[in-house]
Amino acid sequence: MTTYIKRVEDLEKIGRSFPGVEKCFAVQAGRELRVLVQPDQLNDDQAFALARSLSRKIEEELQYPGQIRVTVIRETRCIEFAK
Image 1 (cartoon, helix red, strand yellow):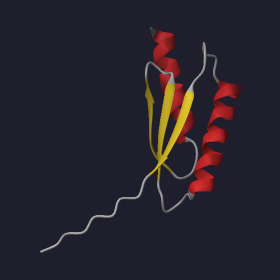
Image 2 (cartoon, one colour; image 1 turned 90 degrees about the vertical axis):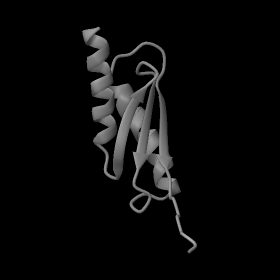
Image 3 (cartoon, one colour; image 1 turned 45 degrees about the horizontal axis):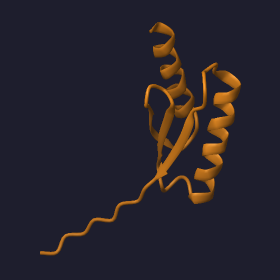
């Protein structure tokens, strides 16, 4: 249990170590890393490059069984009110 918690914490720490990352969550028992980025700091191409960089850094620094899915979410919401 202790190694599982440490792996999840390390996974989230790696995700937060990159610039432009707003939030980072390890989900599905550490099998997936979801990374929310600030859309004004990263464009679509940079989001793809971030996902690749994250997966490479995870491969270098962590020991884990199976695979870890890295999902980078870049979302822009436009809200307007009609009165």
